[in-house]
Every structure is written in structure tokens, then in C-alpha cells.
Image (cartoon, rainbow, N blue to C red; front, side, top):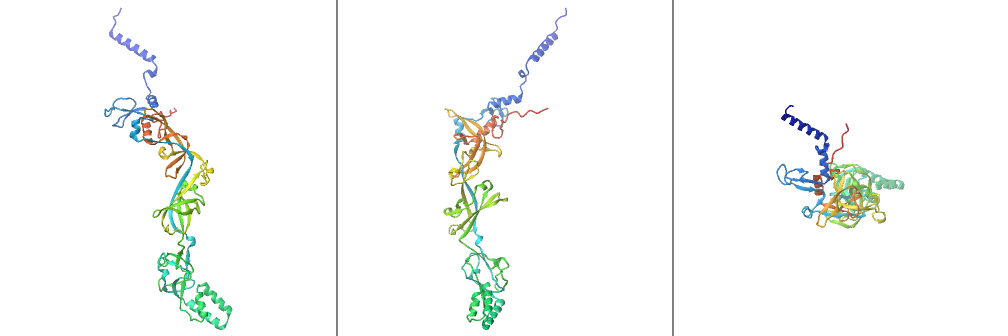
Length: 438
């Protein structure tokens, strides 16, 4: 019989070990790291180094700096943590979507009432009167503007004298009508009364108003003494100083909420709120201004020059309300208003596509708070009468829910560290990705 050799013992042990390994299930020896991470993430518990940017799944010391790691649990805050981060919450309310729409613009003259003073006859300017002094000069009807030397008017006076001597009444009347068309009836009347032929005639303003533009300065000093003018040359542009129009631009997101006849509250930078001005919308543009992404709204104003100056920057505030289908309702008829859950804007975290809030799920007696993520479907953003920004909630929250309004971002960051669902990671930062087909 052959002697037992040491190598035989080693071989027998190796064979026995291999047989045992072959009989064990695969999960007893190998752990899928993705599944392990997902299982750990499901608990919402991670461990973070207070010094370094390191997140672990087990307690212990940081492998980078050696400091003891602290536990991070998603959506849970102790009373001390609540105090430190200055957590504030708010109750989701249920009520009408009544909002304030703000628009800004400038007051200007209403040019529907602008008038031009023009000569009806050619000639040379020999003198200018006070009406031509410049912008904002007050002009009354029949106020002299310029003195004109006009050979055409001198010739017409000679014809009128001749017709009067001949006793031709028809011709006299025809010539007199010519003077009337020139706005020079006074010249004809003086001549028919026995006066001499006038070499110089005065061009007067047929309107009252305020001088807006000095046309003679804009077109090569057209009213300079000695300059010739032709018929219909603009001499003065007169506006009605008591008739203004306020042109404001409503942002595109609120453009459909404004309607004709809607009242507005005005305020200016120099006078502040102007509740004494009764203002209503007189015109709403049928299109958006593509450069401003806004809709032009006009408000006609009369008798407000003591409160507003042309060029003043003015804020217009419109009170609007939404119907149950989120279309504009009659702001004066509460029966047309819809009722919605309303949440403060500060409670909403948004990526621009996805919106969430952190809702209080449980309050413990020791002051500990547990939050849960609430994905939201939002309606329009509103500004209430007190200047607070609110969102209409279409889904995700109910009236009476309590949400974090200050500190929500820190709660969400905690969830991201723990690998649980958050604003940026709907399935959690550690959730396994979809399997690839082979």
C-alpha cells in the first residue's frame, strides 16, 4: 500500500472546496452593486462627511479626511434642524383666483386732437408773433402767428376793389369767398369797408391749443423771417393739453386677461398712487408686440394735467379673476369665479419643466417633522391684492395640506444626498437605469 503524501491532502481539500462553492447560490458570494445601492437608497439613509464632498452608504469615518460621517435621512428634520434652517410652512388654501396685473407705460398727448396751423397762401415771412416762441406755448383761437408779405393777396385785393367799383355783386362774393378760404376774411372786410390795400397780412391760428413741436426748427428753420413759404406749410402743431392717453404694455402671459372697459388703478413715480383718477381701458391691441412680448393697452384720460405730465412713467394695476376653466372671468361678478387650491410661490421648486413641493406628512411629539415629495401640476401664477405670489394648483396638493415655504430647497438637497426621489431625480439619484436590450 502506497504511503499518504502531503500533496494528496492539499488536493483533497481543494476538490472539496470547489464542490462546496459550486453548490452555493450565486447571491451568497456575489452582491450586485447596483441592486445593493438601490436597496440602501430605498431606506432614504446615507452618511455624509461634514468636511469633504463624500457620500457613503454605511456609518464610519470618511475615507478622505477621517472625520466621523453623519447620517442623512431624506425628508426628516429634528426640532433642532428645523430651528437652524429657519423652516417655515404654509397651509394650502382654497379660494378664487383673483389677481393683480401690473403694466407700465408713459402718458402722452392724445394725438387724435392734434391740429396743424398752416398758411393757405404763398408769401414771405416778415415778422413772427409770440405763438412761435417754442414748445408748450399756449395759443388761443385767432391768435396771430406770422406776418406775411404776399403778392397774391395784394393782387386779389385789387380785383376785389375793381369788382366793388363795377358793382358786380356776384364777382365780389366770389372774390370774398377766396379770402375766406385763405382765412383772411378780415382783410376782405376791411377793404370793402373802404380801407386801403394791405401789403402785409397776418396769418392767425384757427384753433386753440398748446404748441407741441416747433416745426420751423425741424425743417431748416422754416419760420425764419425773410423765408418764403408755400401754401400748406406746417407752421405750428397744437395739442389739447387736457387730453392725454396712457399707453401701457401687459406681459404676454397676462395679455388675454385685460378687456375693454376694465377699470385700472394708476400710480406715477412723482405723485404716487392716483385713486382720484377714474381710468378704464379704451383700446386693447389685437396683436402682441414681438419685440416686447407684450400687448398694448390704451387708457384715455381727460382733465388730469394737474396730476400727470406728458412723458410721466405710470403704473396701471388691473384686478382680474379666473373662471373654473382658467379663462378670464368678470372681475366684478363673483358668480363667474372659479375656486382652486392656492399655494405660495415660495413653496414650489421648479426645473422649468417639473414642479414639486415638500408636504408635511407627519409631526412627532418631539418636534420632528417628516416630509414627502409632492409632484405638482400648476396653473397660472398670480399676484394677490397684498402683493403675494401664488400658484393655482391643478393637481398634487389639496386644501389643508401643509407645505414648506422656507427651507424647501434644503429638504430637497437632503433627499438628493440620500438618493431618494427629489426635484431633479424623480426616481431617486441611486435608482438603477433601464436595462439595455441585447
